[in-house]
Image (tube, rainbow, N blue to C red; front, side, top):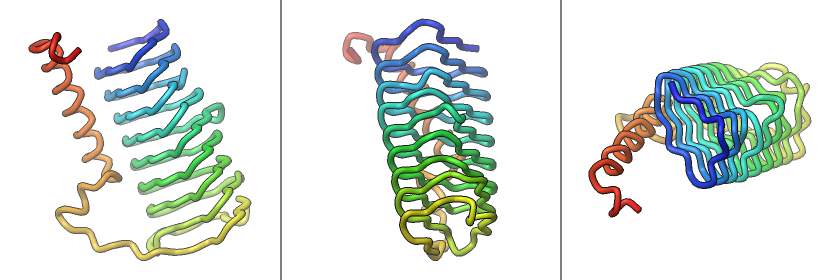
Length: 199
């Protein structure tokens, strides 16, 4: 288990059974674990994968997250875009840019500055606002979309036929988690073997 309770002035690379980050990371966060809780945000991007992932705080740029259960808390403020995939994805808070999400069940009451794109079995709204368009796949069941204010258009797009290659794209949860873990482990090996070269 890893617990970060001191400010991090640079990047944070962290992997473990349980990863908890409760102090500010000034640059980007790379984290993978069974459970990942980031309550402090990050100054730049966040790349996070796990079975249960919870994000809160202010993020200075984009957030990329994948997991079995993904929750963006009410107090979260993402100044860039959110890319989220999971079995269950819950989006609260404020996202200044776009939201692109995929999963079995997606729910949102977030305030989104850009376009909200969802490729899900079921998408449920309980309020919130979308500053541009609401785009949903033709296979997505949309529940209570009258509760969300959409400044742009509501449109449907055709979900592409899945192939052996396309299922490995950025919104495949297992593919994303596997990639995160692989890169974190590779980075650890390089750190141990070639610390001066890495620096």
